[in-house]
Image 1 (spheres, rainbow, N blue to C red):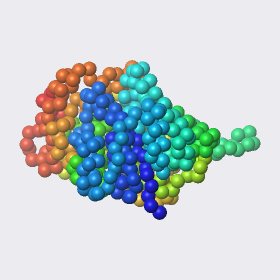
Image 2: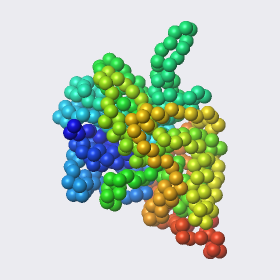
Image 3: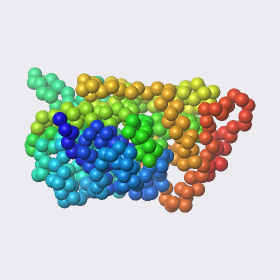
Image 4: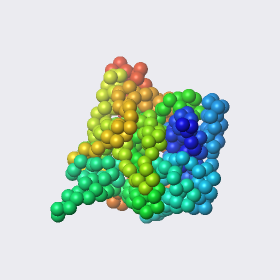
Length: 431
């Protein structure tokens, strides 16, 4: 069967761009849509991708030059309901892959304005899409990126979206009770409820991918040319914990564990993210069906990840210290965590598991772009769940922190006796 048209929303993002390339390589006619707001948020927060990324027009042109495959590029804001309806009506896609949301928990906790913006951007944007599908493409398969953070950390096994409850002699299969951990995670839960409702009432069909924490930046398609690279975030607003640890290790700073480090989450490689989207696309639900796949491959605690990074550096005779900072988040650090993630495996997912070799490759990439590392972003978290926080106030303040730092390569043997600046001295130099 000939692959159809897939509309990828949030195509300029970390996962959206990788998904566009993966589906295009698989023969799908890809329409890539994005408002480019993520780049504006970078300017607001004084953050940037460690890996330089090209503009969307440049990337789609390069992909076509290299492969002969065309990705149609459309600048679109999901908050514009008319524009969303027009694009859906014109494209009549087989599926819509929806990544187009504000995806940072710390960003959503900065203050009231950022919390409200996150909720409006995510919830209203998704509602606009749902109405567009109802009115113009009701048979389209919606593949929506949710998050494992919707569940929280209950003291029971986490099922895949639904749980059978026996109560007072009666039984029913109901949505799993959720305990989101931020205004961002709450917005994702509101999305899940709205999508489930629209499937039940309007007969839409949807796959909600409750994804864990993603690491890595390389896929087969991205590796085709440096100009196709996707973003890599490591800072306190947008970065994930493994990225932060790898960058800290590369520049010789301690690995900063928030609290005790007992927080446990699901993780997966970016190659598995794009594979999961493709598997969901190839195995659509029935009309009226809302289904949830828990999308991760392994579970780690924060302290366990820090130990893995430290061990990987020790293998190269590079000692890495670990420090514990007060946890800026309100979360249980000692908790039970066992989440089911069988349905994608049943569809044929072949997982890539975290190994020292991958940690080494991330650190090697950091060494290449060491001049872009901002050590101040690695020193302390800057958003507190109780009091909020603010991004960098002025560009000039931030610019002072963007001077290159010394990067420790695997060939630099700390046991050779060569003098190495302390982390505090390294930070002072960078400032």
